[in-house]
Length: 243
Ligand code: 6PG
Figure 1 (cartoon, rainbow, N blue to C red):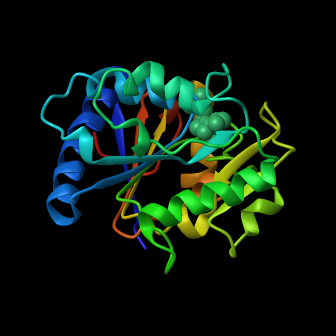
Figure 2 (figure 1 turned 90 degrees about the vertical axis):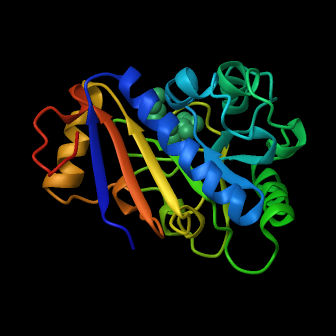
């Protein structure tokens, strides 16, 4: 299990540059090892920060990428609430990831069936045996400490028997979502959180200094657990960081 490394940047533009460097390295390593790079991305503010530099990176072989969503809203892929739509507009429209290697939720299904169907899509890429191991999972964190669609106090925090779970009572709208579960998130080789803004400072203090239990604090990784935060998000946080 990895211990977290927290990188503090003055602005989210610096975080974009750091993510670009990290992903360039991880993508090349994975492609030379397995001829593909498997990545899961979240919604919220992450796609914009992620794409700012990455979208013009010409050194990455994006044709070898396989992209899943760490969580997704059960809405049509062109809906304003769709995490796919946000990632498409910011990143996918600018880089040559084959569309069939971007795995989207099936909005015509109920949320629980959509989670089952998304599990089948994972099996096609990772095989049916053993828990999928992403090369990289990119996560955001809400001010309540949630990550993916794993919310404080929600029964999905305890799920161990599924790779993908569904909910229809998300406290953050829209209510119907699917989410990767801890067995998959914590099996990733690298997990990178991105948290920016003063609104994240209180929960970061509670997670790292007071060791209080929040969904984001339960995330581990097989090799690297990284947090990319800006200075406002670290206001009042004492935990040892790198800059
Ligand atoms: C979602 C997201 C969610 C997000 C956090 C942080 O679909 O709602 O995946 O988990 O990452 O809420 O969002 P911000 O970065 O916008 O604060």
